[in-house]
View (cartoon, rainbow, N blue to C red):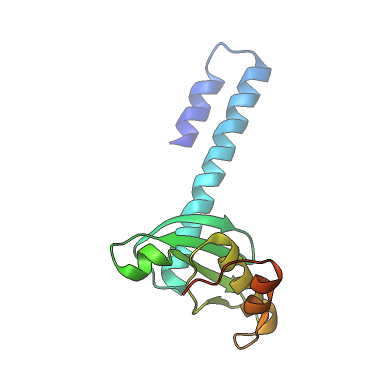
Length: 133
């Protein structure tokens, strides 16, 4: 589809600067769509999530996403995450989160300190975040 759009732009009567701008926009949109598709496939493969709604943070080392559903856990704790561990293998966190801030703290803990560290609890206290039960 994007190749056809680029061909239409190249065959148009726009100036070369306008053509370059449009082709750049089409290329960036195509790259963004490809990245989203790759993120979706990776999350489905690593976390075995079939009902996630959107990827909130996507870097080379972490992906934080939300799930949709009608269950109590999906409503109360919609944030999930996967990360690239020290061995270069994608892993999912075993902890769900009520908000993005806590989800990010959990990823940092799992990635750098390990699952049994008290990092998230101490960070929440230090940042005066309310403990959600």
